Image 1 (cartoon, rainbow, N blue to C red):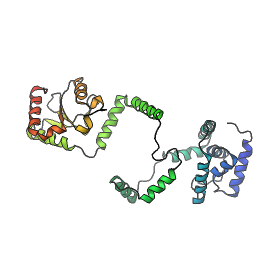
Image 2: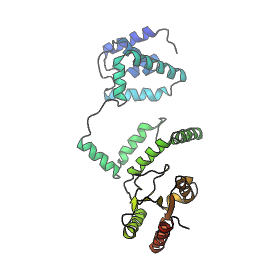
Image 3: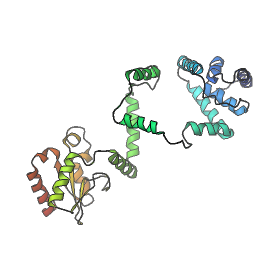
Image 4: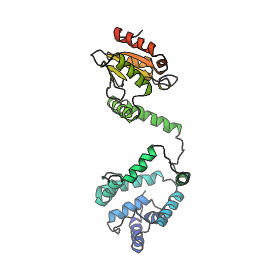
Length: 297
């Protein structure tokens, strides 16, 4: 979108700012019926804007900005294109704009969190949640926004996200790194079923098995729970009924899929189900047969 009276609009905005240096630029843009980002870019390029933190404004100005934003509605494609062009020009020609964007994007290092902030974060992760009053304020603040809480994605958006994730995860190196991170992020490792099997292995096969369910070892894109230490390509997997049985389970997480994928790289696999641990004597017999024969039938 081209503005024939661009210079006149810039001059009008500068006149307003000379009278009130803290006057919100978004309010000026609203009065001129042009995008706020476009006007901000024009003013930055002139180099005549009074030196100020115009994004740090009073509560009254913030309320005026909020009302103007809600009343304006979504941007048109032409406005978006103009904003993009203006930002590119400002980034190329104005060091002040580049510095502002770096700070806004978090590209500059920030001071460490205070102890009070750390405590708030700790309490949050322990399950402490905002009060109902705070939650209502959050709901009110996001009401009418495209990013409001509870907004459901369209089927097309869901399909696009699924394809994008599938493409990213098709990279084996990326998948391995992400899986290792997720394993380490799980605070309760080993799980209770894994701990039971680990105790059995330590008691009857001391020093022979290594616990690797924490993501410390990767085999063919998988992270087995136990690996034999004495050179034998043997693996023991402990499967929970909830995560590995039923409909919709990825093939790699089924008993058949896990055995097949590990067999492709020369590993024999024994799968012990969580429900089978009720009879530990039977589990020991399976492990013994597996260790002596290299497989369990």
